[in-house]
Each structure stands twice: as C-alpha cells, then as structure tokens.
Image (tube, rainbow, N blue to C red; front, side):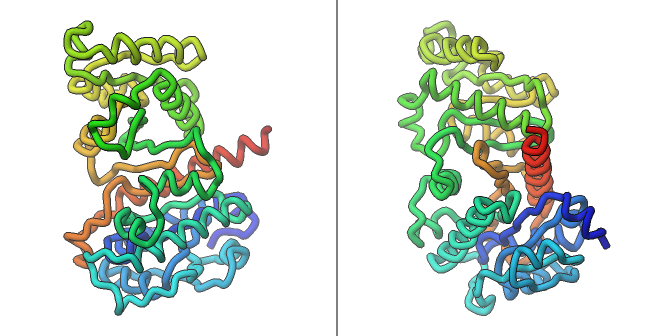
Length: 344
C-alpha cells in the first residue's frame, strides 16, 4: 500500500482500453497484473468495467481494482481505480471487427481525458491502440488522433507525432498525408518546426542537449543535386537556420545508412521527411517496444506504436511491452512538467 501523502506527489495518469474489438484491454490487464502501472505513479482506468473484465479473462490474469465515481476518489484509492465512463457491453462486441459505435465510444473517452487534463484533474493519459477508421466513421474526422487532440486543446501548431524505441526518437516533417504530396510540404519552416518539437520533447524527458540528425529526402541525399534538389534547396538551409536558432542539427544523410548510426547511440533523435521513412526503421528495430507520443501538447499523451492487432484480438497472445513503455514515458513527462512548473 502506498501512503496517501506520498501517492499525492506521483503523476496522476489516465488509461483507456482503446478499441474494444482489439487487443487494448488485454495489454492493459497484463500490464496491471504485473504491478508496473502502480509503481511510482497513480493510474486510473477510464473505460468500461465489462471490457476490463473481458480483458482479464482473455489474458488469463486477475488483479484487484476499485470502481470509483470520481477522479478525486480515484486519487485516494489504495488499489487500481476504475472510473467507468463507458457503458459498452462486452457481449455486443465482435473481436477483430471495427464499428462506428466502438469508434464513438473511444473518441468520447479520449475527449473526456483531455477535458480532465485541461481542468488539471489528470496529469496526462496513455491510451491503448485505437482504430482511426472506426473513429472517422463515428464523426471524428481528423487525419489522425494527434490532430484531434490538438483540436480539443484549441491548439493549431507546435504539435505532432513522435515515436520512440530503445533510446532513439523519430520526429517527422510530414506524417499522415499521401506520399505524392510529401515534396510540396518539405519546407524550411516545416523542418524547423519539427526540430523545435524534437528539442522541446527530448528536454522534457530529461535529454538536455539532444543530438538530432536529419534524414535526406532523395536517394543518396540527392547526390549533389543530380538525384533531386530538396537537400540543396531546402533541407541544408533549414539545418543551417535551426543551428543558428540554437537547435544544432546534423545531416542530411541518406536514411538507408543513417539509422544504422542512430541505433548505435550516436544520436538521440532522427528527423525524417515522411511517415514510413522513419516508421519502418523504428519498428524493425523492435516492434514490441515502439511508442507513439502526441508531442507538443500541454499534457503528455502516449500510446503503443502498434495497432489494434485484430488478427490476434481475444487470443491472449498480445505483448504488453509497448504499452508499458508508453505508460512509463507518459509518467516521466508528467513528472518533468510538474517539476518545471514548481521551479518556474
């Protein structure tokens, strides 16, 4: 049992179970049963009790939990609290099959978590994988959840998706847009915005002097303009300007060799030009530990970088490692924000 006074100093982190037809409840239950969610933090599950119980059954684990009526009550709970804001019935959910109803429920819970954060009732939250298609079908018509979060925070810039695995971060200049549109979005300003997001986020997790490198867009970094001019005309000028602004960047280097150096701990982060340029390298390094961070928002929001895994949903095979890593990063960021606000 954690002493109440000591517990009050820990980050208060919300957890949602993600898309109810996926592996979310299973990985959260496995994480909860291991005890890691309750170590040096105050977690609260905000979701359906029926879905949580089904997750326990599917993952063949059990752990004590306490149904609460408010976050204030959850904060004082000596065992893992559940705030049942979702009324989903497990009997109506077909595992491995998305639906607008499930997307509507998950969207509602995520928005509620943001509301709690804005009212300073939560320090951040970690959500199990969601289904973007289901949420769009339910009316949440955003390119991704990151734009959705920014919308409900009332934020129009300075945010973006970042990924993490084993000490290396990935920041993107462009993200969820068609590949044919990438080149038109590669600009000096967008690269500098990505650099600023990276520097701010890494400092938030304790990396005071981040070593950040920039990936080229074209094969062989453009071969001095003979295989594309984006490096000469845009990327190198952006690196020079960012460095002059106090954000030193290395590169640009061809991404086929860049990540070899990066994973050997020469760099803390890589700025890539488009979605799959970094995602493929990050996920190949260790798919089971990849984390996604909604960076640049007032509160830390994290999730596993893998998806809902409909193909194994309900089988008990899901690995909770990425969720545990995502939860720990959320806690670490929340703690740093809290400390900086006290010191400031």
